[in-house]
Length: 461
Image (cartoon, rainbow, N blue to C red):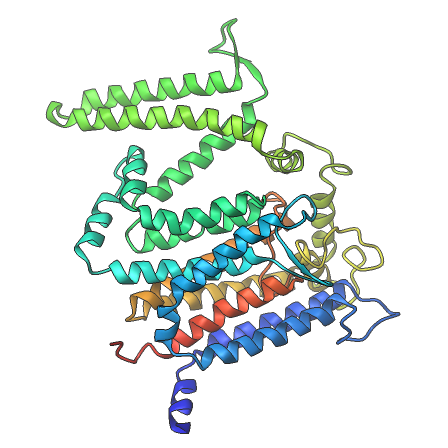
């Protein structure tokens, strides 16, 4: 028995485990610095955020040890059960009292648990289980053929043919939007990267890129009036966009007519018409959603990102102060606990221990420290991708890509918020931002991956 345990631990990827401990250590030290109080300097005091963060790290280590003593088949077998449990939590949290306008937390005394953080684990496990079960079936091969999505019009048959996958991903998205928590909703879209890798998504990423471009253009010109082709005809934003879409459709139709053989034109014309109709509907959907669904603070964050609002000391205060703190760090930084903007006494940077924790790090460590931190996260992501590609188990490969996608989105969006390249939507930086739910969920994601990867050489029955 002891020999089997030693053999098991010998196959753990120590590179991933090492970078995990490095990031956790740096994260706790950074939280300590960001909220340091000379009157209460105790590192392990549970009255402080850093003390609680250390406690949550200890809980995470305990969960990791439990995971290592589980069998990989146990994790696969109960993947759907864990997914169902997390979905029940997302439903239950909707009946709690709102905190800051959202029903996202379960409160237990002075401790809060955010179920959407653990729902990411459930979705990753369920998606891996479903693709693993259907990876070699005839039905799965037909789904991949259908999901090639040679045109944007193919998005509808993609959803209809992949309804199980759409349900696994769509249910938590709907429940999270009901809280409402737009930031976590965006994180759940990261699983589309996994579907793309497994051949289920086809050109869905192209569809999303085009949709984002159209949405940005729509929001930029939605409230403006302009002259049409230097005439005296005034057009509102949406009307102008639709006319541009008509002109583009006409150009593509002319290209098809001129350069495509007659027998091949019909399907291309159908695709063009379908794409045009979807684009027109989407333009109006963006405007309706922006006007009637988004809350005022969410609109302000989008307008600030798009440059429609210039209010550095008002609505743009958070981003302005965050960028000021990062810039004040210079090349080498000011040193540990020496930040003058992102510190506990000045608090020029709002949420400096959570959403804007990157500001404290950058001000104290400068450009060099920021570069090192980006390098550590890059290594973490590349390590996960390498681990995914070396798997013989479809379940482990898909799960590894799910974890990599989640971490990529969190890292990209959080750093983007701090430097003004992404709207402020409350996305934590893994292992750096203060928070028990995020610390435990990110740790469990890592430990499950390490466990599954450690058994990659075992022939599964």
